[in-house]
Image (cartoon, rainbow, N blue to C red; front, side, top):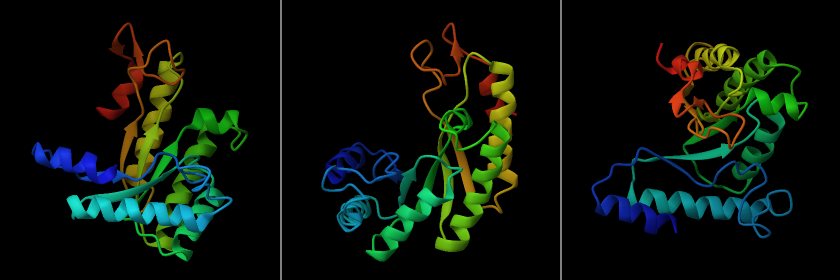
Length: 200
């Protein structure tokens, strides 16, 4: 699948800089075979096949492994220790950073803790695994755009200035989803103040 999709892009002269092998693969993918908590070796094998497929078509593309809960160092160690143990390759680590969901899941007591701990995790990941990172998903409550702007500004500032140069970007997930998803950033089909955090 990976090779087919990327080959189609290349055939149409589309350059690809990054490829995620899976999305928020916190417990692996392609269940039940690739469920990391049951069979880390199989998940690592699937990851390696995906990596090799990317490199076959786009040798210079960066392959990203993406995990949710960017504030939770233990879940990252679980996956990346496993990938290391079974010899899977990847180039970058992608984090989801959702202060809203971190509080809902009781991982953090407030958004400031989420930003603080994701920042510490980025540094930890570089020190332990030698990998650069990106925030490949983030978002904040659409119904509070002023507070959302402050939170997004804090996430962007932390990624840019507080991660030792090891976090290379921030992507807001599905900002256009208004009325369907609590963490969109549009109102009446227009960007809210939240998105201004990316412009300044």
